[in-house]
Length: 242
Ligand SMILES: Nc1ncnc2c1ncn2[C@@H]1O[C@H](COP(=O)(O)OP(=O)(O)O)[C@@H](O)[C@H]1O
Ligand SMILES: [Mg+2]
Image (cartoon, rainbow, N blue to C red; front, side, top):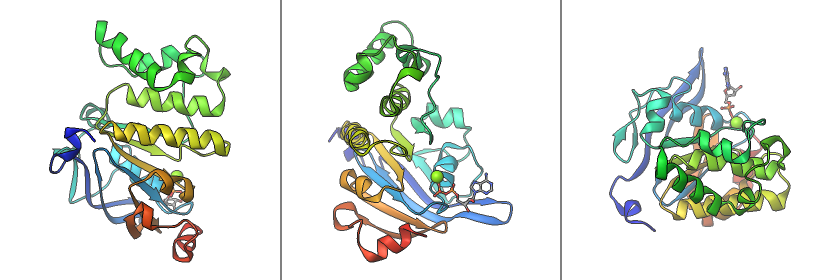
């Protein structure tokens, strides 16, 4: 664990966050913390509010909260761009890579530095994702689903975020490929990044997470240490099936 992970208050702190679409509350008074160096799994059935919560954190949908900070920096009144500048990176659902650009170009799009820094950051990502290093000059549309997901994650990480949010990164991937993606995410957290992982695949997420929060109809219905939660626990299964 890095020094940053030990700092008091380090990481993402969310208190009393709510999101409403018109009159309907999609996220209702949710509080959670994602310390640096930890993976928090955000679980819940389809429609539970996972994507709405992540979208609110990155500033893509309006939200109310009592506290929303990253390493003590208040994010609430910042635009999505300024939240990204503060160190919040987001991998939306659906592996959105630039299909016509090469792997290398896709990563470079995310780099907000020039010169030697730029080259160093690209090299870091290629070292972290050897599969991508082998395909640097390949157009993204030619990659497998798993490789595209790795590329989407690399593009988010190349900004050297303090926190990484991911929306169902295992969706549509073969189990072995998903396991690979999840192993990478564990390694990313171990570097000192706060990882918030929204997933419907509870078993797989719990296997790499430190903590889990289960949303049900927008509320945090259950939370705890990931190793003490079992994906086939009847209470959890009930919540995950809606
Ligand atoms: N843009 C939107 N406008 C209106 N309602 C939405 C919108 N996005 C999501 N919802 C509703 O908010 C609730 C939570 O959805 P969502 O956050 O997508 O859940 P999850 O990601 O857990 O499947 C659902 O009832 C969904 O229909
Ligand atoms: Mg969703």
